[in-house]
Amino acid sequence: MGTRTKIIILFGVLIAVIIINAAVSIYHESRGISRRIEATLRNKFDIADSIQNNELDQLGMISVSIKEQSSRFGDFLDYDNIAPITMILKNITNIYPDDIDFIFLFDEDGELLTSNTDGTEIEEPGHYNPLIEDRRERVGIEEISPKIFEGALARFKPAPDHERIICFKSLLHILHDSGDIYCYMAVIKLINNNRKLIRKMAEIAGADAVYYGADRKPLLSSFSDLTQAYPVKHEISYQNKLFFTEEKELFNYAGKPVGRLVIALDKAPFLESERQLLLSRLMPFFASTLISVVLFFLLKIRIFDKVTQLIEVQRMVAEGKGDLSVRVKIPHEKTGTALDEMERMGSDFNMMMDKLEQTHGRLTSALADVREANRYIIQSLQYAGRIQSSMLPNPEAVKCLLPDSFVIWMPRDIVSGDIFFIEPVDEGLMIIAVIDCTGHGVPGAFLTMIASSALSRIISDEKCRDPALILNRLNLIVKATLHQDTAYAVSDDGMDAALCIINMKEKILTFAGARLPLFYFQNSQIQVVKGDRQSIGYKQSKRSDIAFDFTNHHIQIEKGMSFYMATDGFEDQLGSSEQSQFALSRLGRKRFSKLLGDISHLNFETREAKLVEAFEAHKGDNDRQDDVTVVGFGVF
Image 1 (cartoon, rainbow, N blue to C red):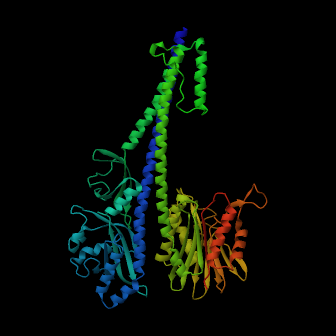
Image 2 (spheres, rainbow, N blue to C red):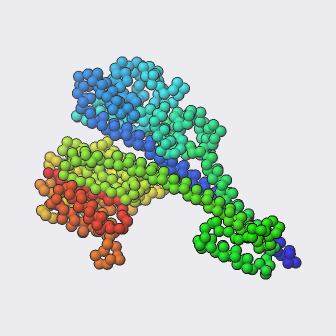
Image 3 (cartoon, helix red, strand yellow):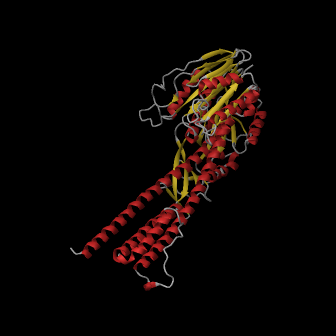
């Protein structure tokens, strides 16, 4: 085999390696784009889903507010005085015009008494009976019968051709003081034609959104019309454009599907990105192939000096001593065929640098796009933070309930894994809780939503007033929600909690804790009541047993006593060590307890400032390890 044949074979192998390398690289990059599409679509859907859940939470909070007026409804119903009730329903609708469309009031036998739209002048009352066919108290998404809009409510029907109508619905039990049901109230916000909701989803999520009925026909869309066919293979076509989709089936309280929420993302930008990727990957490989061909046929001893120049230029670029505008010098008087072999290679190198500089420019532009996307994500998280903050007790309301109190709530990130709960539940009873969920940031915030919803359900719906039983129920609900009570459990997340109920009349504080303690100041000393060594949630284990019964601790409240509950973020904060200026140490429970004792003679506003000041002084320039929550209060 001659030298020429060997060179040709070697060249062929080199070209094959370059092609295979390019193909593998493009394949992996394409997979990466697909994963980014899925992650982007999932993120946008989660944002839209959280907006929908926020609408349900808002309706739930309004329903709680309405239910607190049970005595007023009962007074009027006792005397069959329906007209004032009609006015109350209209006033409620006027107060919450963006959250309520209809309110229907039924008696205990299921007969419609009045509504916020037509009062007692009701046509075909039997058409409204399906609204309370299932009389369980609830808040959720449901499908309602179009027959409701055949009579006096015809003017409110979303669209003549809508065969299915879905809505956010809350069904309330208006109770007598004895606990018997006086009447039922259905509070409804239509989803069909709810342009404000769909625009909000589209603007915040940065993608189009469509609600479909159970028959897979569009009911509400952020597109300009309702001509979108149901997605096929996670794609829909609209006005000759293709969209990626992510969807979720919507179920009513009975578990029956009533529709679907679909998020659509324009496919064109991702196709263009894939095309640009193909070009940017192939061009350097073609340039490398060209340079290899030149080197194979033009290597001669007489060009070593020019090779040195070329190597020097490459080293300058590689070591950052020159920018991408650096080029191999080629005599201006030589052009075309007048260039010798090395000068032509230098020219080819300059061409490669031109393309590299262009590619660098495109990458710089792409980096700017990534920064803009990051800014948008930060804005979304800030919006989520505002939503989370709105779920916490109102500071002014807390001050009205407990004038001698303070709350320190310092998320480590934009959203927090810590929440606190302060609410009067019955006459003379108040519940105060501090909950520390697994992690911090977005994962922790999702768990706080589960904890907040479960706690509200236990306290408001189940009327539980025993701290230990509340923690038992919270443990069961969290495990059930995250499927941790199954053999196929994936999530191993949970929370620690401290919860107390204050009986103002009997001056008794009852405390139960899941790993978090209660501190209280009495007779110039700080006492610590430890919580049980069990957490809430997590997979079944010694640290979280689904059958574990939490323990109640009873404390007789005396004048001058003050109480504190805190997550472990304060104690676990790393700061400068007293032993060494190079070591870090935890602030620790001992120092935290001493600090509480040192400030207990001050007013509560000053105590809060002193705690924050001590925390920042210990932390110094170090990063915060965790979310920090401290609740302090005095009762009498």
